[in-house]
Image (cartoon, rainbow, N blue to C red; front, side, top):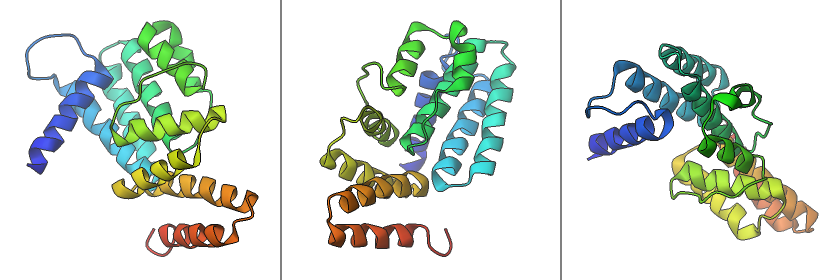
Length: 198
């Protein structure tokens, strides 16, 4: 069951992320390699292992570079920006911007969404939910229930980096509201997440 789910996630990532040329059901090796490296990047990044994550992303770029297709590289860079946004690490997605002219309309629209300038229907996947909350936070339109949901989503996945980021938001809001009891509780939870062995 778990293996089937993993394969399903991998196939979805290949089709969604890489949008390779149509053909038979068996993806080319570069597609599978790139998809696996992207999954490893996300897992390591969310766990807080930045250097290892960046090595995996270099592998993503290496595999996609084999195709000579800048549109696939643009899509991968956009996915990387979304992953970073889920952990509240915002930037202007400069690597995607350098490739924007090669990207499709859908990717360009999603890039605007990440910047808080456009609309996008978020999916039910944990990353999508975190990105949607992050975009609302960036726009200043997030509510406490959304913050709690983001914390719960990151916690359920065991994603240390986004969990600490969203707990930090909760902590600052509790402090600003003068709610010392909630602030203390959130701080204890943050210490647990970032404690020994993390």
